Length: 472
Image 1 (cartoon, one colour):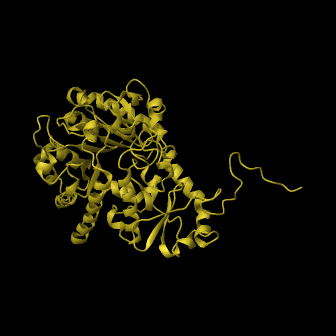
Image 2: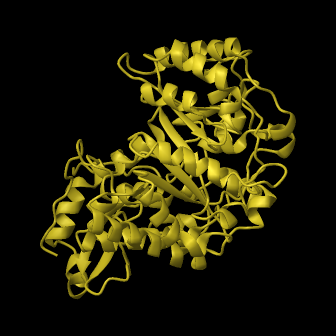
């Protein structure tokens, strides 16, 4: 009697020998706007290939070289993307040592009442918090690991004494960074941070005062442009320095000039972050996707022109992360553009009162408070319903994302944005079309052999080639 293997429950009996039918992988062609190449993407595995347009039919033919090579490695690719999505443990903390800020940026995600009247940690309290975090990471990470602590805001330099005490006390235990508006940065603070190799991020939204002050100013609407530029000048030769530009309707038309300005000030890395639309003030100045995309891609091209002219890169880190998510998914450095995002999974946030949130974007939103660092355990917070709402957000459950070919290069960010702007975790966030256009642009760069110029040096140091298909 013939021995027939039992069919897996709920699984079709197809052997999966063909693209786009039965148990075979979906392999979707996408137009990348290139004169010679199309993209082919398996959305489930985040696999892609570039195929000459006149050989597209050959690539999709069952039993061909492309099909055979791909089917041999598909399980490995699925395992890799699943490990990135579901197998990582927290290794970073966004730490708000104060709720307060000396600026009133129009798009800030932290509630105004907190920024005006919130708490600030004492040095003793901050050191106690870092002791708790150290014990947690000693339980969960390999002995040689050094988790990252980013002092974030509000404005961390308001709690400068506490921040510096923490850095001094735990210099060998954590990798530290400070994200600051730069207005309270004096020579003493700069010397303290740079002598210890601390990562420093400054925020500046334009190349000229008039535009920058539209979105970033004091509570009295006074400009801080000059102070921030002066700080950037002093950091010119410091390698662990970056600048964040929040992109809104107010500055998107000036992105080329902003890129020139940052490059001229010697910034090695910048972020051109589309405004996070978690608060009404941000939504009021949100640019339309298709309009922003036009200026955004031109600014990326401008960084390449500057590199050719000067031999010095200005990496746009958030685009570089999209690009590297395509060429080497496991090498990505930011975990916003993946589903579930990194919030509550790869990192979490601590407020000035010790409250734990999946991400800084949720600070001040009680529904996403998972516990408290001083009165409960981090493990309990990570398993709380508040955190699970974020870590359980999967792109496969969101329309139209679940049928999108580039869904694992984008991840339908951001859950805080989706919840606050669109009314639920099962909704997309903002800037869908901008992400589409970035992925297409990235694939064009790869097709033209230009992608290395947009990535940090050594990005491929520990990567390996999974599939080497050169015949199509």
